[in-house]
Length: 433
Ligand SMILES: Cc1cc2nc3c(=O)[nH]c(=O)nc-3n(C[C@H](O)[C@H](O)[C@H](O)COP(=O)(O)OP(=O)(O)OC[C@H]3O[C@@H](n4cnc5c(N)ncnc54)[C@H](O)[C@@H]3O)c2cc1C
Image 1: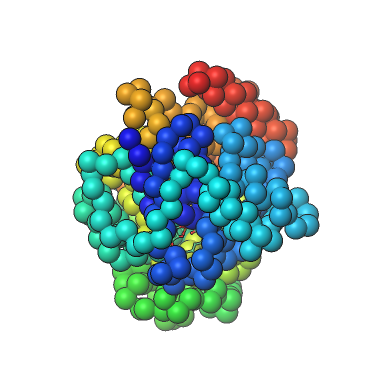
Image 2: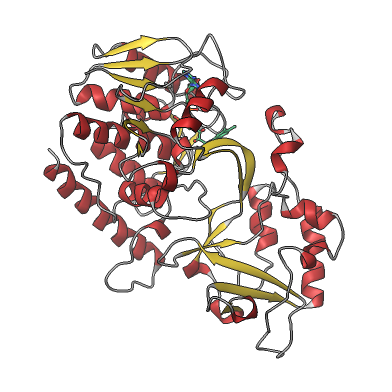
């Protein structure tokens, strides 16, 4: 049966290419150039809407490991990226027009793929479909996706930064819940008065990221005020909001602290923590500079910076099964940024995975997920696992299960994690042949 893929972005092109390579006929539906999202400009496929960097290449980095895994799966985006790379230190950056042209040519030349340049406005749950229409998908389609997801579609991303647990100074962080309720669920960082006041001053003067025209609609931010905006309302405002010190006691003084920042576990393993109430529109280097003033976060490694922008994404843990198919429509899969795989290459990777799971389903096989100690398997589990405050996530080493034995040196540890992931993936790819 022919598979319909909606959207010829990074995820859609990978999905179409993978399905074709697995012997399926594909109808790839792309609305450009008849209609453009507010961020897309060119008629070509796999358009990079912002940066031209596909991030680090070193195997012992999360982005590098992810790309190495994608190469084993036969990623079309990486094949094309290799042909149009531009010098960028240790990163893989591309000449964006050539990249898009090369991917478009590859897809157009594929005999198993038929192209339809139309806006898709509905989804038939009875037809095998991969929805890869991106975070700015057209309104009509968003309505159809929202219905299919049981209302679990967010339109705006208002996320607080996430830091790697191992980069925190635990001597300055205090595990506790307010009023002792709920055990030691949070890590608390306490400000004294002078520390709080300098933090507040830096936060008020920090540089924010420019908003796109389509993001300026103030309705976007109702109920999720950026921390810097809150700070600008007055020196005390944060102390009555997310930095309120009530129900907590600083063991150093035996008294209530002046202000408290709470860090909440991001995953069950406790390898990542998010800064509660710190959704922000500050530029990324500014987030690092200012949030590193929080006691215990001086050397924090940010696995995800806070963002506030338009970004439709599914509440995947609720809407999707572990194989990326909709719980309400098992023949319809989601792929790309809308699933919460955050970033260009993550989105592309998700397209490959969704296509492979579609292939398994059409062949009547149980979906066999990639192992959790691979970056693809870890991301997949992250976006579909139970999560109350689900937000998209990019590749990072904190997602991988720890090594059986602790390795102190970070470079060596990441190298060992990457090596384990690659052997695990090779075995998996043999098993699913
Ligand atoms: C403004 C913005 C900037 C970003 N910058 C970066 C960055 O610098 N680096 C990074 O790693 N990530 C970035 N991202 C996040 C993410 O990596 C990109 O959104 C990425 O392009 C997602 O890939 P995708 O394949 O899921 O969707 P897209 O690449 O957006 O592809 C979706 C495709 O579907 C088409 N489409 C939409 N609706 C329909 C419809 N109804 N019918 C038919 N076709 C349709 C679109 O025209 C588009 O071609 C950014 C996201 C946004 C919104």
